[in-house]
Length: 311
Image 1 (cartoon, rainbow, N blue to C red):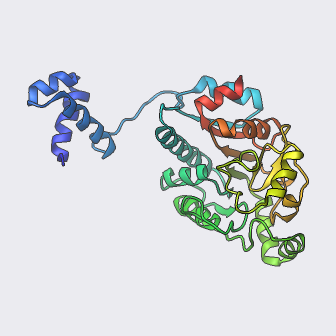
Image 2 (tube, rainbow, N blue to C red; image 1 turned 90 degrees about the horizontal axis):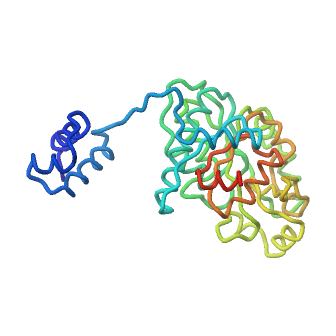
Image 3 (tube, rainbow, N blue to C red; image 1 turned 180 degrees about the horizontal axis):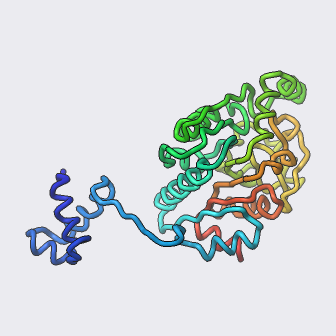
């Protein structure tokens, strides 16, 4: 393993003395590929950090402005799209973490919806020192399974911890087994209290689900084939925590919707800042619908998805 002293030596020659990688290789008796790897390791391990000082800190400012104008967004964050899904996912997670940092610095009550993209963003979010100690609560209750190692409550706890705030639990399943069970949960005082906190929130951060029955849907194990057929017949293109909507962003009444233990889409849209984190071709229809219908008024996505939304 290369020592930090050696990494620092190569980094100073490259960044401060402005030698080329070939010149450094000749000077130190190294192969050029070794110099390339050492520079990458210096970045990865924190020996080298880069600060870019400009009046704006967004790489894709033109696309962000166009999206904001096109869909009436309050804020937009775009990440780079790479030639590999792993690198694109990593870039999205970092951009999502930056978005959470921006949002949590001014939020007082935050609702977080469980999704892979939101979980990844929460993991990339740094510990904040300037936040307002917000209350953080899940958008819905337990899914009966984890999402990339986190439950809704664990997601809220992680975000709250990094923002110096407090997390609140949601003592119910996201989707009840029957309409009667859903009504019973909704009448429970502790659930009513959680719903009241959700309705008073100033910030919402959620993922956006794809078309019902999609191979990557987190709801696949919670809704039946009959439910999927019914939703598709009614024109469902996506969901936010099991609240399905059509291509115009209009809520779809269904048996699934009646069993959700949580606020509905009309109530959700009263939250001032509603940020969706999602990207990729599978999410394009649902993202466009959520933006067109005003379900979301903020977006974190990659630049390729952004350009597709603008086409």
